[in-house]
Each structure stands twice: as structure tokens, then as C-alpha cells.
Image 1 (cartoon, helix red, strand yellow):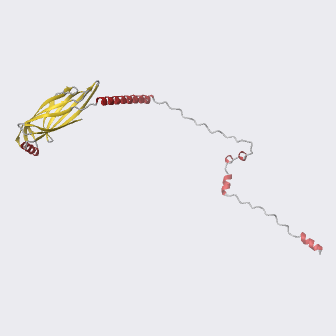
Image 2 (cartoon, helix red, strand yellow; image 1 turned 180 degrees about the vertical axis):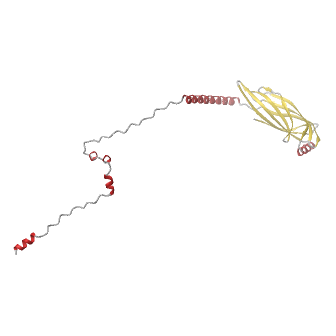
Image 3 (cartoon, helix red, strand yellow; image 1 turned 90 degrees about the horizontal axis):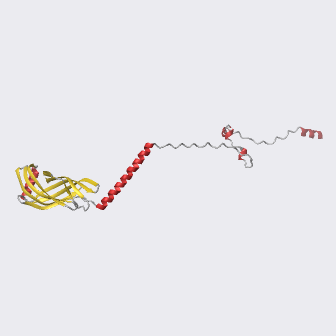
Length: 257
């Protein structure tokens, strides 16, 4: 019986081996990373804090700065000319402003102190004749500037219809000087539309005749070496009594540039 028990122990199966750790297969991402070049992989020695070796890195290439380009001499010349022109413009502008503020130039004044309507009659419903005289007064109100009238044209209107024109010879006015000039307007067979002819006849019958006087003058002012020419325009509305002894009843004159 003892022999049988020992033989049974010798025929027993050996114990199973110890369990081994099961390794997971490599994923696709790990495979791809492992195939990358070794130069891109970080060095373990360089990353370890106890490593006594230092990794030599190549310094980045130095950036080359472009050479400064030379400015074209023509551009410099044009810039200098523009600067000089700007300085001259500023200088003359300031000088003109100072002169005008100090002098305070004023426009000459045109006025009609007296007028006479000597004759006015119709040859037909649309043609009339007239004899009209006015006294023009030109005044230079400036204290420091002389004025010269280089061209003077005075026109006589009934409503917006011109009926006579007179011109005056050029003349010069000193400071604070006035000049009286007599102008004689003769209208001979002047055409008027029928409606305007009827209005003029009614005004003659009512003893009130309205005329308009327009003056255009080219004026030149002189102050030392400064000369300035410009145009001024005068507009006068006058009211006359009927001829043959027509005289001035009212007037309103405006002179502006």
C-alpha cells in the first residue's frame, strides 16, 4: 500500500506555469511614430537632469539686411523746389493778410444823387423814344489806397429790357475823393415787347416811372508796389416823375464785387 501511494505522487501533473503579463499589440499611431527619423527624436541624455553632456545646436543663419537704396537726385531737386514754393506761398499769404488787415480796403461806391427824365413818347405801340439824364457820383472811401477806374459801362433798363448804354473815360481817384459825372441817355426807336410798352405807358400816366441802372467797373487799387485789379457791380433802382419835368423821387443803390 505504501508503494502505491508514492507512485501515485510521482505520476501527478506538474503545476501550471505562473501567469505572464499579456502585452498589447502596437497601435497604428505608435508604429507611425516609430518610423520617424531618429534626428527628430529627443535625446534621453539631453533631457535628463543629471546628464553632464550638452547638446551642440547650430546657430540660426544671420539675416541679411538689404542695402539702403540711394534716392534719385531728381526727386531731391523736386522736393527742394516744392519746399521753396511752399515757403514763398506762406510768406506772401501772411504778408497780404497783414496788409489787408492793416489797410482794410473798401470797394468804391457808385450813387445817383440826381436824375431828370426829359422826354418819353411812343412812335408805335412797341417803339418809343426817351431822353434821360443822371448825375453819377463815384467815391473812394479808402484812407490809404488810391483807386483807378480802368473801364466804366453804365446801362439803363426798363424792367429787364436794356434801353440805353453809356461809357465813361478812365480816371483815378485819390484817397477819400469823390467825382461827379453827368451821363446822358438817349433812346431812339427802342423796341419793347407789347406788355412792357403798356406798363411804361401806364407808369407815365400815373406819374411814376421806374428805371434800373446797372454799372460794371474794372477797378485797380495801388498801395506801394502792390497792384490789384477786380470788377465791381452797381445796381440802382430809381423812381422818376413823368416827363417833361421828370425828377428823381427815390433811389436805392448797391455796389459789390
